[in-house]
Length: 273
Image 1 (cartoon, rainbow, N blue to C red):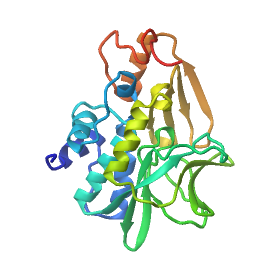
Image 2: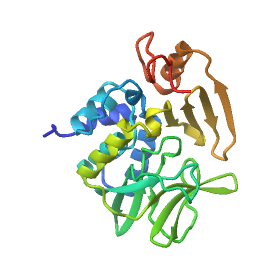
Image 3: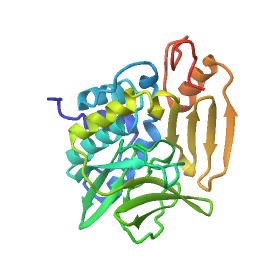
Image 4: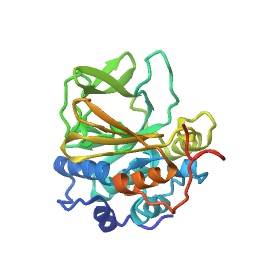
């Protein structure tokens, strides 16, 4: 078994210095801090390294090595933090639908957290890359708009399925789909294997890094393009020209440092194109 979570090290990593009581204000603040300080990224997948979901391995990578990770790492860490603080939280399985049409069925390879607090259910998710939440949102199926420090969100029902949506400008976009089915450890292990190892997983074929910024902005790296997006959806994109420039972008914008000469992606490629 892993040693108990080092909360002090986690809070030093995320920059959170607030109260540790299990309140809604604490939940919002911890979600915001992690989404801004610990980047979403899939670089170990492209380097051919396995993704270990043991909590000790996640602490070592995301906290002590100051790396980032994807949903199974990010939300496993957040789950441990919240339960250690006394929150009632459970992992819920989902399908990521961001930029995918409704007639396409993506694999159920996402996990978020359902948090019960003062008789209400809340959704917390710091593992959605460029669409990670920066506050918890209420599991309210009415479709009512909910504000966050970044994009407005809502939850809508379509038959047996629930959809978490984000508004960019005037348009609502599906972020993920779920049924509130809990995702036990064995299901997370299987989904993590597909995400990190299956040849058809987009994490094997695209370089991704993302983090939320203060003021409602987001920073996203997708292959050769670095995009800064405002909360209203307006975006500015810069193209990265060389592998060395990529390493500099990762260090300067995401706090991710790799040795000079590091190359990502399949043999013969500096990184996926």
